[in-house]
Image 1 (tube, rainbow, N blue to C red):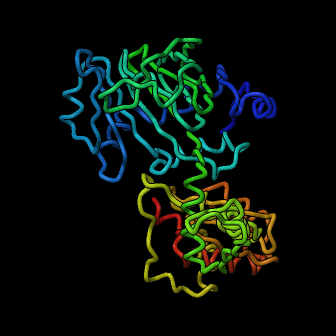
Image 2: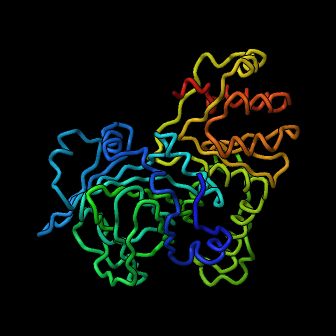
Length: 392
């Protein structure tokens, strides 16, 4: 899938993480028509799918939040207007939704959080708010009005006693109406308020993770303990000039900082950790498939099945990234790292990291190289690749 009327070079230079942008007719009007409101409601009834219903009620408790899974009664009891259904991780459940990601490959996929889809009748929305992540908002069906502001996007500006963190002050600076195929990009901390202006409003949100330094530090500490990274010890400074036995001198804090900096300074370790950090499945992505017992199939029988026409697929929840700056190259999958044989074709790594489905014709061109066959067989044994028919 490819975006229309869109210049990635201009966007990345002038808009990404800088300011909002509206792109009219970014996709054909029927590009996302494969998912209907009924389909979305069906997903929201599934136990493993994260979903919410937000109802604007007015009065003393103006907003109500319900969490799924939902039943048919939950939907038949909703009001005629002023409510929204939101379903997270639609790309983890629908291959057609996952294909939408190819339209955004100018930004590394490991930056992605997920694709959320919402449905709302007239006047439906979730209220004025801001987020800490970048997002592309694509209108799949119907019409939505977007009100934007860059003012008062601060932690102290919120309505008290609400189930959602909604902005109290919201001076509107821009207003846009999006119809099917239109797209709005919003950087982090831009206030937005989307309101359905039709009875069939469906909006797709392609959201990108916020990488908080505190979260990274916590994860690196766990990684260092798990991987038995060699310790860097605190080295005492000179104690000649302390004024009291309780003193923490500036020199002491500098030595502590130096010990931590030395832990972070090893380039190979840091690359390995970062790849694991950005590919580790997030909380709402569910648990990944475990290793089936029949995966001891010898490599010759494995390649024979490919030659007989069987393809391979990755689980839609899996996260893949590669680091070609290291020697050997690193392949990161679901928070784990594999060192890549120098003889593995780069084209195979690119394919594995950019697609979920790999048909036998594509694979046949690869397995003539024994190193490629060994990698594919190993990934299949590890349970991150499956025979395509197993994912149907």
